[in-house]
Length: 67
Image 1: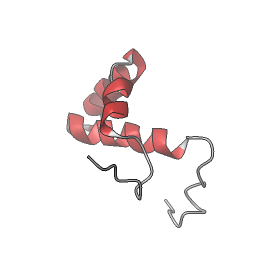
Image 2: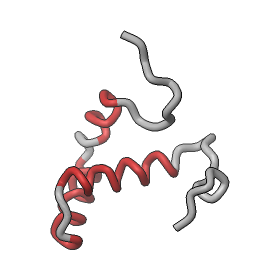
Image 3: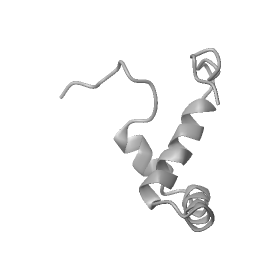
Image 4: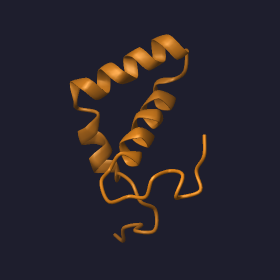
């Protein structure tokens, strides 16, 4: 099975490991409660944050991402 190396970020097995963390689970619960979004959306927000803070990656503004 080939890996998709063109898209940076966490792979599925890494995502499962991340969401075993009590901190990640607490983040998801809080975001769901406060923002009124689905658990899947809250997980994606957390993963986006983790992907932005990984060392060695360009800052979001350098990638053309602006908020």
